[in-house]
Amino acid sequence: MAPPIQWYPGHVAKAERALKEHLQRVDAVIELRDARIPLASAHPQMAQWLAGKARLLVLNRVDSISSGDRREWQDWFRQRGEVVYFTNAQDGTGVANLLKAAQAVGEQITARRQARGMLPRPVRAVTLGFPNVGKSALINRLLRRRAVESANGRGSRGNCGGCGCPRRLNCWIRRGFCRRC
Ligand SMILES: Nc1nc2c(ncn2[C@@H]2O[C@H](COP(=O)(O)OP(=O)(O)OP(=O)(O)O)[C@@H](O)[C@H]2O)c(=O)[nH]1
Ligand SMILES: [Mg+2]
Image (cartoon, helix red, strand yellow):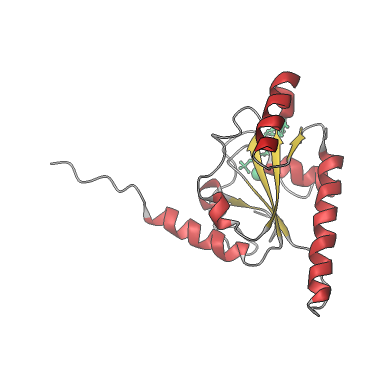
């Protein structure tokens, strides 16, 4: 008889643990999805993982959808109380708008920290999303420099040489802690 299929392999559990641990250290999350498949490119547990955290939802690759589809998705998310930011991380369309929103979120976080008597420090943000969705390209656009490698393909694998986090974390956690992952 064939051995039972393990649907929840150890490396996935390990990646999830690492993700949760990393999330404890960040103030805000930029969640990236593919504008062509905004629901299919969402992780079902994302909302749970990000509970209580500031989050900006980005639909990247806006150049790959029609303006009609964009309007429909915008309405769809708005009806559910969600603000979405459409970007083309390759040519930078929509990034200025996202940056403004991110700065506003940052100011709120800083004000909250100050009100609690905490010392000021730079706001920590991370981008999360499926492989190849454009995380690196967006980071480079937001920072206006080539801070991370952005390329078509399978992305980087193995352990990160900087903070030591699993680079792929099964394709979920990326960026924000060290430049190399
Ligand atoms: N047409 C188009 N291409 C994009 C867009 N954003 C990123 N790309 C391209 O898509 C490819 C993958 O982008 P990356 O930034 O490396 O994606 P990633 O999410 O960091 O990928 P991994 O690190 O492998 O998970 C690159 O060739 C980018 O130039 C976009 O909005 N539109
Ligand atoms: Mg990348």
